[in-house]
Image (cartoon, rainbow, N blue to C red; front, side, top):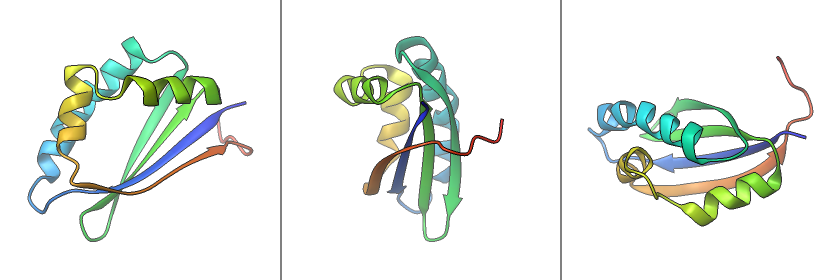
Length: 98
């Protein structure tokens, strides 16, 4: 069962490019350091808000992610561009498109 992490966050105006520049490094760190990481999609919303949709193999893998936090430079750079969390949810993918 694929678990989906839905994280909505804000960035400060003017930090869009910083966030986008940090994204590849975060994804590389996830691929190397996060067991169960399957992929991610970043969605730009109005008013400097973003939605990060990350897929995990299981709830346990997602829980392990939270315990590690921003432990690698690419992850820390991406998180550093974030001004604040709007919401964070976990769900189960029931209608995969792949």
